[in-house]
Image 1 (cartoon, rainbow, N blue to C red):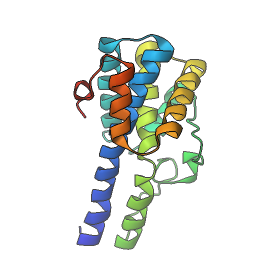
Image 2: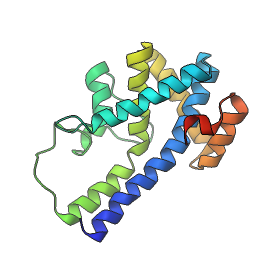
Image 3: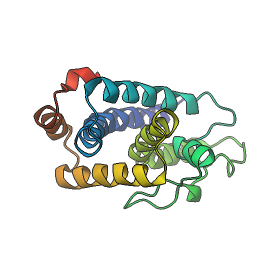
Image 4: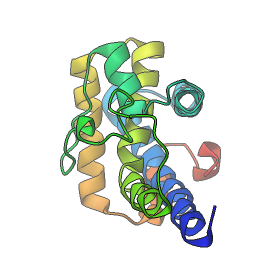
Length: 178
């Protein structure tokens, strides 16, 4: 991998870390306030989420978490500000032609992928809620709406999410391992 491709790939890791520090605390607050869950149950589900996200990289052909969610539940994750994941071959393995990419194509793909980290994490949480808690479309919709409301209010500053988590619940950011 040349330096340009490697730098583009590293940006995905930076964005992943940022979005984990935003979405996990917000998800915990939503589950606490809207669903009455408490610390142990929330932490269990977030651990399951990590396993779901890791699962997508072990599948062949490689699938996005959003694709896994739709295939397993019949629910396509629709988030405000994002088009359907079906429009992008790197998120929908049914469109991937299996051909290799040139270095400029890889850099462009990594740049686009970084923008989809948040929806991928949210899809992982939704799939964990579906599998382990029996959440269907209605409850997942309420969960996503609650998450969207917090994200609109707080923006993209991870520190504010940690503060909200510790103010609204008895969960510490360290409990989420972030």
